[in-house]
Length: 485
Image 1 (cartoon, rainbow, N blue to C red):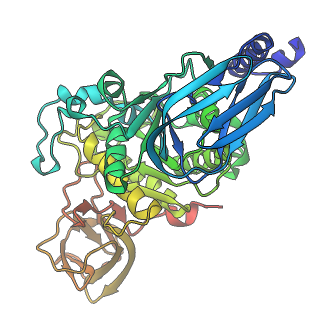
Image 2 (image 1 turned 135 degrees about the vertical axis):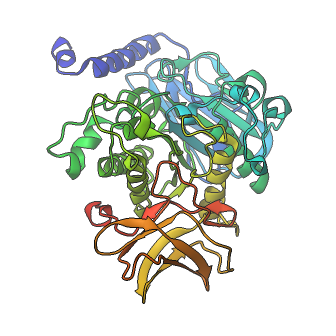
């Protein structure tokens, strides 16, 4: 044992010791469950459901739920698990019984849709903060400052991951909660407003699992082994503590069936002036998480980080410029080339370029929900603003094609710049006609490239479906550099 421990890192030693402690504890223990299985939970509909836990070795355990009864015997280490057949949607509270040498009753269980939301501070951003922020400038987006007071929807359930507790067995069985009162105050605003929109539109129970850490880079959410398997990092040492949060905060959730993931992270990596390396880190994370859950097609929807004055920040490591953030957005957008992914734009969701934590979390959650409703739940809705697809040139104009662009004509469009072979970009005029955007400038006779909102303080007004276009440049160097397989 000493030889085994000495070969592991300190973090892995701690986890192994915890597991060994649980095994030792279970040798003389009653039936115990992991934190993620508790009263008030939502179970994922239409998928085989894992129910697992700990008990004494060779102990018989029986699980009863929704007309199903499953029996098993614990292994020599006291581990046990059963699989329930796929469950139908149920908004009626039900009780699950787990019986061994003792009997556990989990009550008020619903069956519906379950999502994991993760990232850094903008995902962690708590509902309680809404009551203290100043009134946002964009009144059209609303301001639900009193949402916690009004929230009484028992069809929305929440689970807030405690990184120090998740891997420990649960003897209280109350880690899930109805999304109201003190539990909601501490929960992710983005996660809650996502759930509110999905629950309202689908009319079924929604469970949200929030696992985020303020200030975290992306690397701690990915295991070292996953980085080692990605060719891009073959000869690169990945910093920022790979696995630090994945091991205690994501991996223990992976037996719990879900519909998909929501991700809001990137500011910490943007401060390091990253571009294509971040795209590969996201690719690695997505592949790892899908593999951990055993489902390669789990939806992964994420947030384009909001505008911020990175160029005004001092850094001892890198030089931050006005192109630092646009290049990062570009890297984030490359990940859309992976299957079952989606990204929302937040270009218009920051009233102050010096605020790293914009207040419009209700709109971020709503926009993520629109993507899920359109792409996962096949609702016939408009879920995306314009996304650049192709460029062509005619005379002295650039003609841009977009996905998700309504064909109606519009007034003058702002936010575009245009360049010729010299590479010098100048402000451009733009107009929407016949489903295309025409971009031109009197200063450019033979255009070769166009950019939109290519700045850390974007003001462009290209919208469709009430949603902003993603920023882009047609002279994007990452298209050929980023490999999806």
